[in-house]
Length: 400
Image (spheres, rainbow, N blue to C red):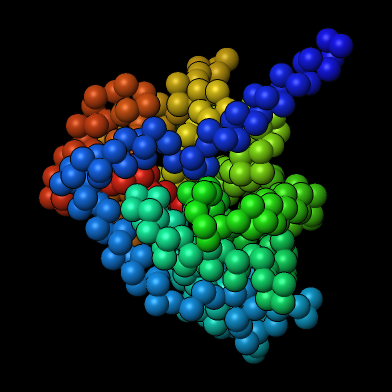
């Protein structure tokens, strides 16, 4: 009897969590408050909503793409398998056929655009989240319908829906047909799952749709954890590994696997985050890149995703310090003078850095870590960019 009672209590808690999640990776209270602000005609939130409406209106005119909308055929012969080319690899000019390709970190090979799903998956993800957000804030069912169309075309279409694998992502010509690093492109699935959550309750997104999409992500998660390509990414020690855990955690939350999500945070994500840290808060794996400031920030964005999702299962990653005194704040403190442009960045950065991304992070860290200095620097960064000051979602730029 005691065992049965414990099981029933656990199921009750899990059902409560499933019902209470408004989104997967955003701060739900922030969004609920933003919606109330919109209802109250707050000018800043209305301006932010208008930006989403403009993007959603563009999406209304787009034919939802499919992973099968391509000319190149994957090695499997199945156009439903996702396929892309590694962006920083180029033909070797010393070889007659250019193979095997060689790496030029930070420089994109234009050949990547010959693989259409790399762009199409972003069209799908952006269209779905923009339309779903506008539906949530306005209740206008035409946006819900369009968001649902994007999701069904990419994932659920019986003839053209994507197979749940990334076996052929970021291939390096002459070296492999796909690799673990390609999973970084799967981060677009996080806003996709946010979109699906925001659609719940609309006429356009049925229980059947939800069940089928959850089944798809369960299958993709299993592929991530058991396939050769997925295990390669599991071993990554840089931003790739952090996003790997962020993606796994998001899929656990979307598919109501809350216990598994806690295991990922406690037994993988926390170790992965802090094992990248020096005593000064540096990320050595990112600082050797030709876009060191970008990739350090990119890794911090993955950490924000993990920390925000972990809050939903009652784990405080933002303010966690491990047995060696390591915490996320060390990373932020290391980057703060560079984000504030008070010190010169002396590591490689071959392209201009987008400081608005830093402002988004600092605003989130400032609130979550109760650190006013972070917020002050964020406000200083955005002082000349009013569009960056107010948002509806709080951190929607993350994963882009």
